Image 1 (tube, rainbow, N blue to C red):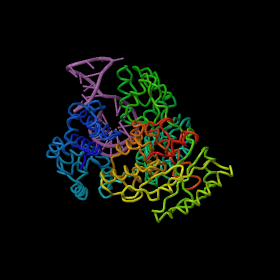
Image 2 (cartoon, rainbow, N blue to C red; image 1 turned 45 degrees about the vertical axis):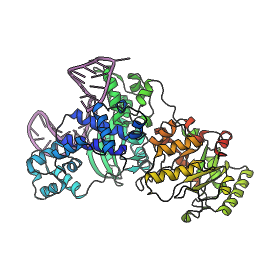
Image 3 (cartoon, rainbow, N blue to C red; image 1 turned 90 degrees about the vertical axis):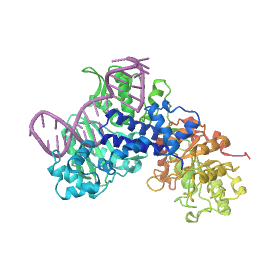
Length: 574
DNA sequence: GCCGTTTTCGGCCCGACTGTTTTCAGTCG
C-alpha cells in the first residue's frame, strides 16, 4: 500500500497533538503543524518528487529532521518518533483535545486531577458532577462538554456554492446595519476553496456594537456562540457557523488581508514584515506606533515590497516568492472563457433541446458549445446508441444552419468501460468533433488497474478529453485511486486534454491537479457539464477552481476561439 | 523543529472573547 501525502500529513498532525499534550516547545509543535500543511498542499506525491530527484528540504518548513521522517514514513509507512510519543501519552487523550473548549492545558488538568484519559471517562465524570469541582471549570464549560460528548463532532464542511447563498443573503442584511461603509466575505470562501468550514464576514463600521447587535438578531441565527464589542460568532439554522469581525474603515484592507488568510500565507507575510521592522496585524502595518499601511490590501502588500496577490493563490504555495520575483500568473477570468465542451440535452439526462442549450450558451457569452450527451452504456441516463446519436447530429446541423444561438460542436460523453475501451464503435466516434471520455462505473478498482484503464482509454485514436478525471463527488464519493501523474503525462504525449468540471460537487480537477496539468503542458477544459440552460452559470465555479490551480488563459483549452480549437480537438493520431 | 537582506543562535504572528476569577489563563481563529 503506497503512502500518500495525506498519510504523512496525518502523522505530523498527530505528533503535534501529542507534543501539545506533553507541553513540548510550542515552536516545535508549530513546526509539525506547518509541515503537515505543506505536505498536504503538495500538488505531486512526495514519493514521486523524490524519485524525480527533488530535495525535500527545499519545501517550506521542512528541514533535515522532518525530511528524514518523511523518507522513513514513505519507506515503511510508520514513524518511530510517533510510536514513541504514542507510548508516552495515553490513547484517548487526543480525542479530548478535539472537543470544543478543551485545549492542551485543560486536558492535562483533567488527567492530573481526575485521571480522565478518554471520552468515556469524561462523560462519567460529568455525570457524577466532578468537573465543576475543578478550578477553572464552571457550569458553562461543563454544559458545553456534556453536549459535545453526547453529540460527537458535527464539523461538516459545506460546498462553496451552498455557502454562497447564505453568505450573500447575510451580507445583504448586514450591509444595512448602522454605520457600515464596507463589507466583504473573507476566509476560505474568498480564497475559493471548494468546501467551506465556516463563513468569515468582515465589516467596516463606525458603530461596531450596533452591527454586532444586528448580526446576532439575524432571523436565521440559531445560537450565539460569542458576542463582544468588535466580533461575534453565530450558528445559523443550517448549521453553518458565521464569524463576524468589525474594524474601523482605515483598517479595512489590513483586516481583509488578515481574515482572508490562509494562516500560512499570513504568517509568511508577517515574517517578511518583521524583517523590515514592521508589525502587521488586522489593524494595519505599523512601524513602532506609526501606521504606515492598511486602508487597502494593496497597501499591505506594498509595505513588504510585493504586488497584490489574488486571494485564490494565498496558500503559501510559492505565491509570495512568485510575487517577489515578479512572476505571479495572470489568472484566468470568466470572460476569457470562449466556449464549453461538455453539455447535455434532453436526449439523455438534460432538460432542454440542442437549440435551447445553444441559445443559453449565447446568452452566457459563449462562442461555441459542444453537445456531449451520454453514451448508451449507462441505462439510467437513456444513453445514446449509434442511431440516436446520428439523429442528434442532424439536429445539431439544423441548429447551426438556423444561425441562431452559439455554434454547436458534435461530441459525446462516452463511457470508459472497465477494461479501458470506449462504449461506442470507432466508426461512430470518428464522425464527431470531439470525444469526451468519462468514468461512471467500477470506481473501486485498485490504483494500478484504474490507471491502466485510463491510460488505455487515452490511447484510443479518437479520444479527445478526459471528463471529471477523479470522478469524486465531494462529501459523497472519494476520488478514484489513480496515478494521476501518469494520466497527465499520457495526455501530454497524446495531445489529449483534461477537464475541470465546474459542477460544485465535482470541481474535478482539483487545484493541485491543475498545477500538475499546467506543469506538463496539458491544456485544461473548464466545462459546465450543463444539464439545464441556466447551468452555464456554473462556469464561474470552475474558473475559481482553475485560479486556485494557478491557471492562466494560455493553460485553458476553451479560452481559444473556435477557429483555433477545432484542429486541436479533431484527433487523427493513431 | 525551522530559519537567515539582523545567517549557525535566538528568535519564532498576534489579538479578541470567554469563563472564571477578581486580574487572567486558555482557547480560538
